[in-house]
Image (cartoon, rainbow, N blue to C red):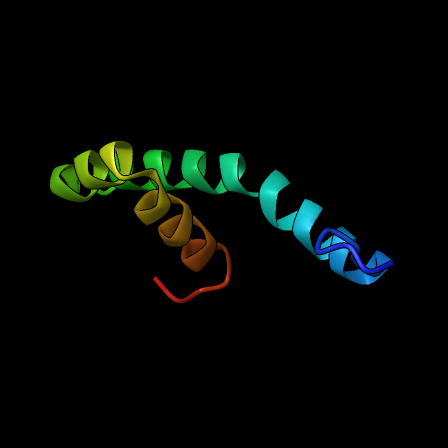
Length: 64
C-alpha cells in the first residue's frame, strides 16, 4: 500500500541534507551580516529565519 511518506533513498538523503544545512547557513548569514555591518538584513534574517537560511546558502554558492 502506498504511503505519502514513502520516499526513495535519494530523496531522503536530499531532505536530510537540506534540513541539516539550515543551521550552519543561518549562522553564516549572521556572521557575514555582522562583518559587513548590514544591520537591517541581520535583524530581518534573525526574525524571519528562512530569509537568513536562504541568504546563508546564497553566500555559500556565491549568489550574494
